[in-house]
Image 1: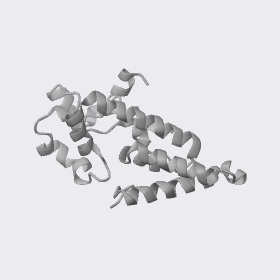
Image 2: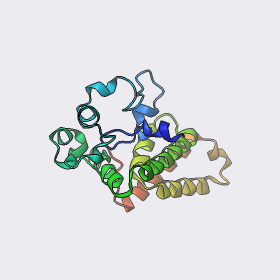
Image 3: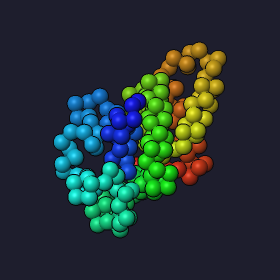
Image 4: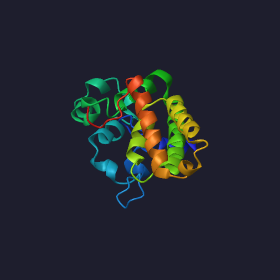
Length: 185
């Protein structure tokens, strides 16, 4: 993915649209991303960040974690579900370019999961997993799944079984690492 294309997927709030199930959807209601299209005009965070202050992300704002607009959103109320605050802290720490590089790697990994392990009901789970879990942990889950299915010719082509097993392994690894993959905590 080109850097400019990836940059257009950075939400002001710290979300990376390339890991969002609404962006990954093939449905007519698919979201084109936070910085593309007209949906951004209703976003109070985008209006404050870009329109009012001229920032690329809220990470540039010295008051972001005390911002009334930012704190009204679910982003602050449930940081275990939406990793935006952690992303903004990481952007400040390592810089936008390095953070973006990691997000594009996560998005590429998400595409592998969607192409090879999505039985039609796992997209949201894979999006959440790729947004929250370290890439190495997801790769480990994929390797364990593939190792388990080697020699099980009947199962290697069963997408439902592959998805079920991968989800079990990913959940197990996430629990061990104290990472929540549940929407409601």
